[in-house]
Every structure is written in structure tokens, then in C-alpha cells.
Length: 257
Image (cartoon, rainbow, N blue to C red):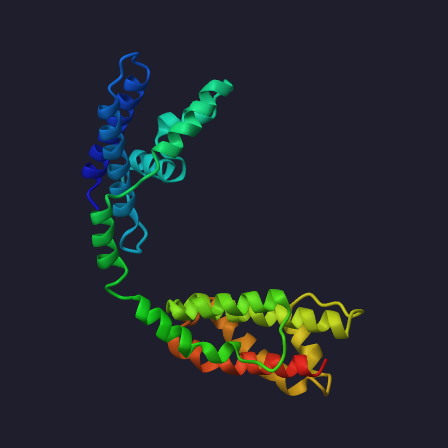
């Protein structure tokens, strides 16, 4: 990442904003010029943000001053507007809010189409989404109604799988187990108290009605601990190998209620 180019781009962006504000406060401001500069600002700002985020990598900036400026820029936008938002004068803060809305990053439509082809459609398409939606259908075909919260989590899990985010899918599956186990314990053993998922599953393993599914879920929990502690990486093979097993055993436990 070329830090010199980023510095120059930030400086140019500040110059564009200063010109915009100058036009606003001129009695005979040129409307056409304002709109033209505004579009330039929005598009250049979008390009800077794209440069910092497009490769799905952590952007390494060695210059501490530039690093701070970029972090602030990503969080709050232009520092002039950011400072104005903190003013104690209502007129100033209202002006800053209006400007912040106008200055939101934007791309020319043709540029946006090119970026979509480069960064999205090169690895994913609408057809891919439909096919993967069909492929993940087995996880939402059940003979019971899961609680609303659990059903919402299962649908989020499905989206992780459709977009091939397997680490997120594995973590979501672990969350689903904990939420379901808490719900089952609350419905069946309200007077029991536990601190960890391990304690909860060990308890359910001791109940004859839940012994088999609880033992399988406990084995899954132990494996997931290795991922949590960084000893293994969650991958497609692991998630697909455990997905139906985990959900089917949760379903079995609900059938015992």
C-alpha cells in the first residue's frame, strides 16, 4: 500500500471540502461548480476507502500519523466535519450533520458496476446464491418448530454457508448449541444452575432421555474448543461434516420435552 499516495489523496480531499464550504458561504456561490466538486469529493473518498479495504486484508500503515488520520477518517469522515459535530453551537452541529450526509462516499454507476464484476461476481453470482440456498435446505427441514430465537440463528447459519464463510458458520453452530441447550434446561430443569456449556451437557448426559444426543453435542463442543483456542482452523469439511449431525441431535432433544 503506497502511503505517499494515500497522504496526497487525503490532502486533495481536504482541499475539495474547503472549496465546497467556501462556495456555500459565498453569496454568489456557483451551484454548478458546487455539485461538480461534491461529486468529485464523494467519488475520491469512496476510492480511498476502497483502497484500504478491497483485499480483505488488514491494511498495514507504518507512518503513525497517517495511520491515525486514516483510522479517524474511516470512523468519522473528514476531520473538519468531525470536529464541527462536536461543537456546542447547535447551528454548527446541524450544519455538520447536513454536510456529513452530503459527503457520503459514492461511486459513478459505471465504476460501481466494474467493481461489482471485479470483487463480487468474479467469485459469486445470483445463480450461486440460489444453488447454495437449495443445498442448505436440509438444515431448515425439521419435524418440530424451533423457538423463534433459535430459528433466527439457524437462518443466519444458512447465510454463512451460502456465502462460504465456514469459520463464521462453525462459530454460529456452536452458538446454536448453547442457545438450544439453555432453552431446553429452562423448560425442563428450571431449578438447576450451571456456569458453562460443559456443565450443562454433562448434566443432560446424566438424564436417560437426553443421554445420546447430549453426548454427541458434548463431543462437538470439545472439538470446537480446539478452534476457539487456536489449535485448529474451522474449514468447509469440518462444518459440513458436523452440520446435520448437530442440528439433528438438537432436534432429538427437543422431541424429548
